[in-house]
Length: 281
Image (tube, rainbow, N blue to C red):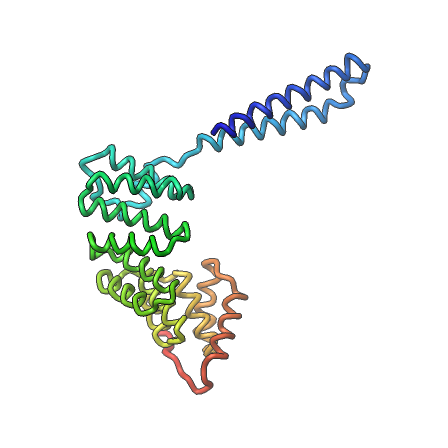
């Protein structure tokens, strides 16, 4: 904030100096006023735009109501009888979404110290885990998700997210267990279903990857990750009809065709010629 104020003052002084030199050049040197007028206008306008940008950047915070709606599921029943503390949690969530992790984490830790209920603590730890994950601190994120599940064992989102972290550490056994539990709790969680499909793909278990990708698309027909994975695997096996179908969906949802083709080629090189695969249902 202090830096922004200093920059605004500097821009104002530079604009005033530019106008001053322009006036001095006219009065002292007899230069026609039209000669440098355009240059001065450009300089002053540029400084004005810079000041406006700094001012707008310093005040344009996303309203807390946005996070109330965006995280409605995660915040359901959290600090409902304590609006002030709920507001503090939302402010910490805003810090996380602004990528201010070094400020968000202490805010979450402070909320933990208020002796919240199990439901409240579960929510705090959930957002703390998201923050640690985005910050690149995987082990800390895992600890937070484990604390979430200690207080809320039926949290299928936390289980799915925890599985991703285990998979990123190549702990595939724990990753699969987390995904399977998440799907058991919520069979409509297409994120968890897709994550399991992606895990099987990484392990070269293409039959399982196809099965769970198809399951995910039954729930969310235009889900890009699952459509892309099916295009990769079907393309690798040379199943042109299925490949074309899911490639079209994936590209419509923003996937890169060249990347899919490259990964399909890698699948093709990893399988035997006589291997078959589950086709579209």
